[in-house]
Length: 327
Image 1 (cartoon, helix red, strand yellow):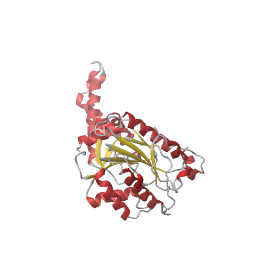
Image 2 (image 1 turned 90 degrees about the horizontal axis):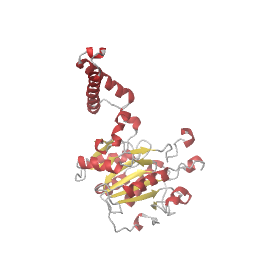
Image 3 (image 1 turned 60 degrees about the horizontal axis):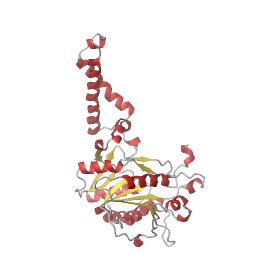
Image 4 (image 1 turned 135 degrees about the horizontal axis):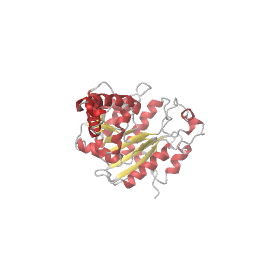
Protein backbone atom coordinates (compact mmCIF):
# COMPACT_ATOMS: atom_id res chain seq x y z
CA UNK A 1 0.00 0.00 0.00
CA UNK A 2 1.29 3.45 -0.93
CA UNK A 3 1.37 5.96 1.93
CA UNK A 4 0.87 9.69 1.59
CA UNK A 5 3.88 11.95 2.01
CA UNK A 6 3.65 14.89 4.40
CA UNK A 7 5.42 18.11 3.46
CA UNK A 8 4.77 20.17 6.57
CA UNK A 9 3.47 19.76 10.10
CA UNK A 10 0.29 21.71 9.45
CA UNK A 11 -0.74 19.58 6.48
CA UNK A 12 -1.05 16.35 8.47
CA UNK A 13 -4.62 15.09 8.67
CA UNK A 14 -5.33 11.80 10.42
CA UNK A 15 -8.60 11.23 12.25
CA UNK A 16 -7.51 7.90 13.68
CA UNK A 17 -5.94 7.39 17.09
CA UNK A 18 -3.11 5.02 17.90
CA UNK A 19 -1.63 3.28 20.93
CA UNK A 20 1.92 4.06 19.84
CA UNK A 21 3.43 6.36 17.21
CA UNK A 22 6.97 5.49 16.12
CA UNK A 23 8.94 8.22 14.36
CA UNK A 24 12.38 7.71 12.81
CA UNK A 25 14.51 10.85 12.41
CA UNK A 26 16.77 10.54 9.39
CA UNK A 27 19.12 12.37 7.07
CA UNK A 28 21.54 11.29 4.38
CA UNK A 29 25.06 10.28 5.35
CA UNK A 30 26.24 9.66 1.79
CA UNK A 31 27.50 13.21 1.24
CA UNK A 32 30.00 12.80 4.05
CA UNK A 33 31.56 9.91 2.19
CA UNK A 34 31.47 11.60 -1.21
CA UNK A 35 28.48 9.39 -2.11
CA UNK A 36 30.69 6.31 -2.23
CA UNK A 37 29.12 4.34 0.60
CA UNK A 38 25.44 3.50 0.76
CA UNK A 39 25.26 2.26 4.34
CA UNK A 40 21.53 1.49 4.28
CA UNK A 41 20.91 2.39 7.92
CA UNK A 42 17.42 3.75 7.29
CA UNK A 43 16.37 0.75 5.20
CA UNK A 44 17.43 -1.69 7.91
CA UNK A 45 15.70 0.32 10.64
CA UNK A 46 12.44 0.71 8.71
CA UNK A 47 12.40 -2.95 7.65
CA UNK A 48 12.67 -4.09 11.26
CA UNK A 49 10.02 -1.61 12.41
CA UNK A 50 7.56 -2.61 9.68
CA UNK A 51 7.91 -6.22 10.76
CA UNK A 52 7.22 -5.27 14.38
CA UNK A 53 4.28 -3.03 13.46
CA UNK A 54 2.63 -5.80 11.46
CA UNK A 55 3.36 -8.75 13.76
CA UNK A 56 3.43 -7.43 17.33
CA UNK A 57 0.13 -7.61 19.22
CA UNK A 58 1.28 -6.51 22.66
CA UNK A 59 -1.54 -5.21 24.84
CA UNK A 60 -1.67 -1.40 25.16
CA UNK A 61 0.38 -1.03 21.94
CA UNK A 62 -1.74 -2.88 19.41
CA UNK A 63 -2.45 0.08 17.10
CA UNK A 64 0.87 1.45 15.89
CA UNK A 65 1.77 4.17 13.42
CA UNK A 66 5.21 4.30 11.76
CA UNK A 67 6.57 7.58 10.41
CA UNK A 68 9.88 8.69 8.93
CA UNK A 69 10.92 12.29 9.56
CA UNK A 70 13.39 13.40 6.88
CA UNK A 71 15.47 16.34 8.11
CA UNK A 72 17.96 16.35 5.24
CA UNK A 73 18.45 19.86 3.87
CA UNK A 74 18.35 18.46 0.32
CA UNK A 75 15.68 15.75 0.52
CA UNK A 76 15.53 15.19 -3.25
CA UNK A 77 19.09 13.85 -3.11
CA UNK A 78 18.28 11.42 -0.30
CA UNK A 79 17.59 8.46 -2.56
CA UNK A 80 17.22 5.92 0.25
CA UNK A 81 14.30 7.80 1.81
CA UNK A 82 12.66 8.23 -1.60
CA UNK A 83 12.88 4.48 -2.20
CA UNK A 84 11.04 3.84 1.07
CA UNK A 85 8.21 6.31 0.42
CA UNK A 86 6.02 3.54 -1.05
CA UNK A 87 6.21 1.60 2.20
CA UNK A 88 6.13 4.17 4.99
CA UNK A 89 4.80 7.69 5.45
CA UNK A 90 7.55 10.31 5.24
CA UNK A 91 7.54 13.86 6.58
CA UNK A 92 9.96 16.39 5.10
CA UNK A 93 11.18 19.35 7.09
CA UNK A 94 13.22 21.07 4.38
CA UNK A 95 11.04 20.46 1.33
CA UNK A 96 10.00 24.08 1.57
CA UNK A 97 12.81 26.33 0.31
CA UNK A 98 11.84 29.07 2.78
CA UNK A 99 12.84 26.97 5.80
CA UNK A 100 15.62 28.76 7.65
CA UNK A 101 18.96 26.99 8.05
CA UNK A 102 21.52 27.44 10.80
CA UNK A 103 25.26 26.85 10.57
CA UNK A 104 25.31 25.48 14.13
CA UNK A 105 24.89 21.73 13.58
CA UNK A 106 23.92 21.08 17.20
CA UNK A 107 21.27 23.79 17.02
CA UNK A 108 19.98 22.29 13.76
CA UNK A 109 19.84 18.86 15.39
CA UNK A 110 17.74 20.32 18.19
CA UNK A 111 15.41 22.14 15.80
CA UNK A 112 15.02 18.97 13.73
CA UNK A 113 14.15 17.04 16.89
CA UNK A 114 11.50 19.62 17.81
CA UNK A 115 10.01 19.49 14.31
CA UNK A 116 9.77 15.69 14.33
CA UNK A 117 8.24 15.62 17.81
CA UNK A 118 5.60 18.15 16.85
CA UNK A 119 4.90 16.44 13.52
CA UNK A 120 4.49 13.05 15.21
CA UNK A 121 2.21 14.53 17.87
CA UNK A 122 -0.30 15.40 15.14
CA UNK A 123 -1.15 11.70 15.18
CA UNK A 124 -3.15 11.11 18.33
CA UNK A 125 -1.45 8.65 20.66
CA UNK A 126 -0.64 8.37 24.38
CA UNK A 127 3.01 7.48 23.59
CA UNK A 128 5.62 8.46 21.03
CA UNK A 129 8.76 6.44 20.36
CA UNK A 130 11.47 8.59 18.76
CA UNK A 131 14.29 6.68 17.04
CA UNK A 132 17.41 7.61 15.17
CA UNK A 133 17.79 6.01 11.77
CA UNK A 134 20.60 3.62 12.71
CA UNK A 135 19.04 1.46 15.43
CA UNK A 136 17.37 -1.94 15.29
CA UNK A 137 14.64 -2.77 17.80
CA UNK A 138 14.70 -6.30 19.17
CA UNK A 139 11.85 -8.45 17.90
CA UNK A 140 10.43 -8.52 21.44
CA UNK A 141 11.24 -4.87 22.25
CA UNK A 142 7.60 -3.72 22.48
CA UNK A 143 6.74 -6.66 24.71
CA UNK A 144 9.67 -5.84 27.01
CA UNK A 145 8.65 -2.18 27.20
CA UNK A 146 5.09 -3.18 28.01
CA UNK A 147 6.31 -5.46 30.81
CA UNK A 148 8.43 -2.83 32.57
CA UNK A 149 5.78 -0.13 32.15
CA UNK A 150 3.14 -2.43 33.60
CA UNK A 151 5.32 -3.73 36.43
CA UNK A 152 6.39 -0.24 37.50
CA UNK A 153 2.93 1.23 36.85
CA UNK A 154 4.11 3.81 34.29
CA UNK A 155 0.87 3.62 32.31
CA UNK A 156 -0.94 5.49 35.07
CA UNK A 157 1.98 7.62 36.30
CA UNK A 158 2.31 11.23 35.10
CA UNK A 159 5.61 12.13 36.78
CA UNK A 160 8.05 10.85 34.14
CA UNK A 161 9.56 12.47 31.06
CA UNK A 162 10.95 9.58 29.06
CA UNK A 163 11.85 5.92 28.94
CA UNK A 164 15.12 5.23 27.12
CA UNK A 165 15.52 1.91 25.35
CA UNK A 166 19.25 2.23 24.66
CA UNK A 167 22.43 3.23 26.46
CA UNK A 168 25.96 2.63 25.06
CA UNK A 169 27.34 -0.70 26.27
CA UNK A 170 30.80 0.76 26.87
CA UNK A 171 29.28 2.85 29.69
CA UNK A 172 27.09 0.09 31.12
CA UNK A 173 29.72 -1.73 33.18
CA UNK A 174 29.95 -2.18 36.92
CA UNK A 175 30.21 1.01 38.94
CA UNK A 176 30.70 2.06 42.53
CA UNK A 177 27.06 1.93 43.52
CA UNK A 178 24.51 -0.14 45.42
CA UNK A 179 23.22 -1.77 42.23
CA UNK A 180 26.65 -3.27 41.55
CA UNK A 181 26.87 -4.63 45.10
CA UNK A 182 23.44 -6.24 44.85
CA UNK A 183 24.11 -7.80 41.44
CA UNK A 184 27.54 -9.19 42.37
CA UNK A 185 26.20 -10.47 45.69
CA UNK A 186 23.46 -12.32 43.82
CA UNK A 187 25.92 -13.92 41.41
CA UNK A 188 28.18 -14.73 44.35
CA UNK A 189 25.45 -16.71 46.10
CA UNK A 190 24.50 -18.41 42.84
CA UNK A 191 28.14 -19.30 42.14
CA UNK A 192 28.60 -20.72 45.63
CA UNK A 193 25.44 -22.81 45.37
CA UNK A 194 26.37 -24.19 41.94
CA UNK A 195 29.92 -25.03 42.99
CA UNK A 196 28.79 -26.84 46.16
CA UNK A 197 26.07 -28.69 44.22
CA UNK A 198 28.51 -29.94 41.58
CA UNK A 199 30.88 -31.27 44.24
CA UNK A 200 28.00 -32.91 46.14
CA UNK A 201 26.89 -34.73 42.96
CA UNK A 202 30.35 -36.25 42.48
CA UNK A 203 31.02 -39.85 43.60
CA UNK A 204 31.93 -40.20 47.28
CA UNK A 205 35.28 -41.66 46.30
CA UNK A 206 36.29 -38.35 44.73
CA UNK A 207 38.93 -36.50 46.77
CA UNK A 208 36.93 -33.27 46.40
CA UNK A 209 34.24 -34.73 48.63
CA UNK A 210 36.71 -34.78 51.49
CA UNK A 211 36.30 -31.02 51.91
CA UNK A 212 33.09 -29.77 53.58
CA UNK A 213 30.32 -28.27 51.48
CA UNK A 214 30.76 -24.81 53.00
CA UNK A 215 34.33 -24.74 51.69
CA UNK A 216 33.22 -25.28 48.10
CA UNK A 217 30.39 -22.80 48.56
CA UNK A 218 32.97 -20.20 49.62
CA UNK A 219 35.15 -21.04 46.61
CA UNK A 220 32.25 -20.59 44.20
CA UNK A 221 31.02 -17.48 45.98
CA UNK A 222 34.46 -15.89 45.72
CA UNK A 223 35.10 -16.91 42.11
CA UNK A 224 31.71 -15.87 40.63
CA UNK A 225 31.94 -12.08 41.19
CA UNK A 226 35.55 -12.03 39.98
CA UNK A 227 34.45 -13.78 36.81
CA UNK A 228 31.58 -11.31 36.35
CA UNK A 229 33.88 -8.30 36.73
CA UNK A 230 36.39 -9.76 34.26
CA UNK A 231 33.68 -10.42 31.67
CA UNK A 232 31.90 -7.07 32.11
CA UNK A 233 28.41 -6.26 33.31
CA UNK A 234 27.10 -5.47 29.82
CA UNK A 235 27.84 -9.03 28.75
CA UNK A 236 26.94 -10.80 32.00
CA UNK A 237 23.49 -9.18 31.98
CA UNK A 238 22.87 -9.86 28.28
CA UNK A 239 20.96 -13.05 29.13
CA UNK A 240 18.07 -10.84 30.23
CA UNK A 241 17.48 -9.79 26.61
CA UNK A 242 15.89 -13.15 25.84
CA UNK A 243 13.19 -12.84 28.53
CA UNK A 244 10.91 -9.80 28.60
CA UNK A 245 10.10 -10.36 32.27
CA UNK A 246 13.75 -10.05 33.34
CA UNK A 247 14.28 -6.50 32.10
CA UNK A 248 14.91 -3.84 34.71
CA UNK A 249 13.96 -0.20 35.02
CA UNK A 250 16.68 2.12 36.34
CA UNK A 251 17.30 5.85 36.53
CA UNK A 252 18.39 7.09 33.09
CA UNK A 253 21.56 9.11 32.47
CA UNK A 254 21.39 12.28 30.42
CA UNK A 255 23.24 10.87 27.42
CA UNK A 256 21.88 9.65 24.15
CA UNK A 257 18.70 9.86 22.10
CA UNK A 258 18.96 6.75 19.92
CA UNK A 259 15.62 5.38 21.17
CA UNK A 260 13.37 7.31 23.55
CA UNK A 261 9.73 6.80 24.51
CA UNK A 262 7.78 9.91 25.55
CA UNK A 263 4.28 10.15 27.03
CA UNK A 264 2.02 12.48 25.04
CA UNK A 265 1.51 14.76 28.07
CA UNK A 266 5.07 16.11 27.92
CA UNK A 267 5.52 16.68 24.18
CA UNK A 268 4.18 20.24 23.96
CA UNK A 269 6.07 21.57 26.99
CA UNK A 270 9.25 19.72 26.02
CA UNK A 271 9.23 21.28 22.56
CA UNK A 272 8.63 24.73 24.06
CA UNK A 273 11.54 24.22 26.45
CA UNK A 274 13.88 23.09 23.68
CA UNK A 275 12.89 26.11 21.59
CA UNK A 276 14.12 28.38 24.39
CA UNK A 277 17.56 26.81 24.86
CA UNK A 278 20.62 27.08 22.63
CA UNK A 279 22.56 23.91 21.78
CA UNK A 280 26.29 23.71 21.11
CA UNK A 281 29.01 21.01 21.28
CA UNK A 282 29.03 21.02 25.10
CA UNK A 283 25.24 21.20 25.33
CA UNK A 284 23.73 18.85 22.71
CA UNK A 285 20.06 17.98 22.34
CA UNK A 286 20.15 14.95 24.67
CA UNK A 287 21.43 17.10 27.54
CA UNK A 288 18.86 19.77 26.66
CA UNK A 289 16.06 17.18 26.89
CA UNK A 290 17.46 15.92 30.18
CA UNK A 291 17.53 19.48 31.48
CA UNK A 292 13.76 19.75 31.03
CA UNK A 293 13.35 16.84 33.45
CA UNK A 294 15.23 18.83 36.10
CA UNK A 295 13.18 21.96 35.40
CA UNK A 296 9.87 20.11 35.80
CA UNK A 297 11.02 17.59 38.42
CA UNK A 298 10.17 14.64 36.18
CA UNK A 299 11.64 11.15 36.47
CA UNK A 300 13.80 9.62 33.73
CA UNK A 301 13.97 5.89 33.12
CA UNK A 302 16.16 3.43 31.23
CA UNK A 303 15.35 -0.16 30.31
CA UNK A 304 18.16 -2.62 31.05
CA UNK A 305 19.50 -4.41 29.16
CA UNK A 306 19.07 -2.56 25.87
CA UNK A 307 16.13 -3.58 23.70
CA UNK A 308 17.73 -1.71 20.80
CA UNK A 309 20.93 -2.40 18.89
CA UNK A 310 22.89 0.57 17.55
CA UNK A 311 24.19 -0.28 14.07
CA UNK A 312 25.49 3.17 13.12
CA UNK A 313 29.22 3.65 12.80
CA UNK A 314 29.01 7.14 11.34
CA UNK A 315 27.29 10.13 12.89
CA UNK A 316 25.16 12.55 10.93
CA UNK A 317 27.27 15.39 12.38
CA UNK A 318 29.98 16.76 10.11
CA UNK A 319 32.90 15.96 12.41
CA UNK A 320 32.22 12.22 12.40
CA UNK A 321 34.67 9.73 10.98
CA UNK A 322 34.14 8.34 7.50
CA UNK A 323 32.63 4.86 7.36
CA UNK A 324 35.81 3.47 5.78
CA UNK A 325 37.67 3.89 9.09
CA UNK A 326 35.38 1.32 10.71
CA UNK A 327 35.82 -1.39 8.06
